[in-house]
Length: 226
Image 1: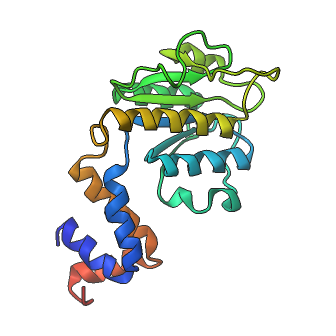
Image 2 (image 1 turned 60 degrees about the vertical axis):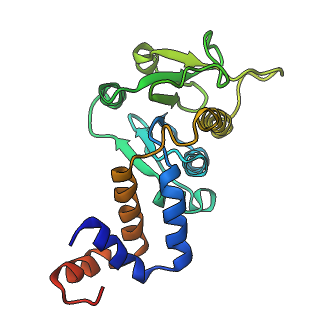
């Protein structure tokens, strides 16, 4: 059974509306833009950022857990974590370096958001190559390690007395602006290719079924009518 055949079989067990969403939304997802959260400790912020990623079509989010565990608040995320691939870095002594080196090896430029940044804003950042937008922990911001490994910084222009936006607000402003710019330049240039779309739709279908492994096993064995 091919993946296409398996997807067709599995989606017989989910609603037509959900399948229509899979077919419509998967081709709009992107990995050209990704997000890195370093040591976020407030569940509200963690949840709001994954929800923003889903809404703007960013498929991957990378979570560094050196000191703080990443915790979601279901009432804020509203199930968004089912649709976004969350990659967690929590096994090494220096999870920041592990995450950033892995992203750079895959061709990402590392851009850290900072109210003290002197270079780009969301309106000027170069989007010609893949970009990882990094957000540091609440209150203290990005670690010295993350700043040292960065290729550049990004600041959100502000016109008030307070120094910075809340992390969840910063992520929403930055990701929305960048994703809109990217899609205005070319709506499909940085979306997933056909193979990635196929794999993503299959992964989403599996997440919809409580007994997906058992159903898939029986479909492949021919003991369940697909």
